[in-house]
Image 1: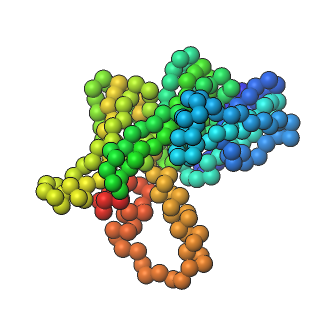
Image 2: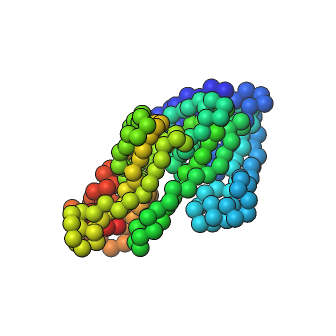
Length: 253
């Protein structure tokens, strides 16, 4: 299998498959393909009925994956600005990828899910899902904006916005917490939720929060048919900004 990244602003991963080679991905990611490519579906049934319902109906994770079988080529994209990278997983190596960031994985890569628990505070993050992938095999993933990598030693930590998390080693822990903006009741009332990240292992961050990108896209689509609105305030711009998700949560959203 050969992988080539095409494009710059909105890149695609062009995958050349030999006869007998197979990859899988979410629905709706293929841009173009060789007519010789064969298509199939693969059900994601890990964890039993309870986990399937929680993962798909509550978390929005896919139940079916699309399968592409060689020989031939196929190109895949997340249809948004960013970077595309590939990673060769060793046997038993496990990583977690932010939901809706995986482009493709080879047939030998085991797929499951990992849930990051939120703080449970009303109006705050209730948690989110990540794809859990175990080698051997190759994966290709999309980072929204630029990708920043950090190799953390045991006990080394950093705090990040939850929308910035792209991928991490399974050994890296994520813990949601509320960060007060000063003391007293006001400081706690205006607190924002972030993630405490602790090593050992590698974590990669993305500089665009995908949820902000989707909100901006949907807002632009609805605005085309809506009456003209007054200019957005600076606070509103920060809230909807793609970069600096933590700043965007100063209002407690």
